Length: 115
Image 1 (cartoon, rainbow, N blue to C red):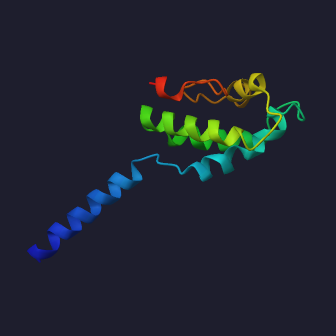
Image 2: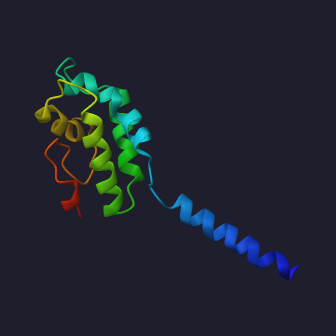
């Protein structure tokens, strides 16, 4: 019985560590905000429900400044895939969705400066 306690404790601690991290892969971040492209290109008057839901999910996953910086980098890399995105409209998404993301969404954001 004692020999099982240590492995069980290690497994429980490793699960807590994994579940406690935001660690969203860039592909997941991009999938969650792809629906924002119509608004960010000026083809929709407001962000869609899918856009806002994705932004909220990303914001809720943030656990640290490192998470914010990683998400920022993913977003900046993803912007390159969508020609015609307007930086001014990108910056309006959090307020339009009533979501606080903790850093400015912009093609010009210095992700390394996010705290």
